[in-house]
Length: 137
Image (cartoon, rainbow, N blue to C red):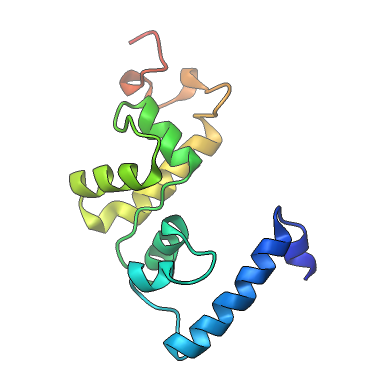
């Protein structure tokens, strides 16, 4: 309880964990499913979470789009979309499934460490020459 309580919207998350657990036992024999449709049928699991599970737990292609991925791709001009589902589709169509999980992780780390939302560190960015934020190029 105390771990979940430290998170935002913890009551909703706790409720979804209970519902998800019941559904896993009743509908999937206690096993976490290994496909998008079944994962997203679980309470509280959207495409982002399902893609994380596919890529990290099962080594299957999945491209999770979070706020960092969205921001970095938009700044690089590779995505002009705000919908995570559209960004996921664009990247999936343009790249090899074998790189999806790692590509997402790299974009997330880049967004956290360098390409911040309010004050990006363009002067140390290895992608500066590709970026629409950088006025030098």
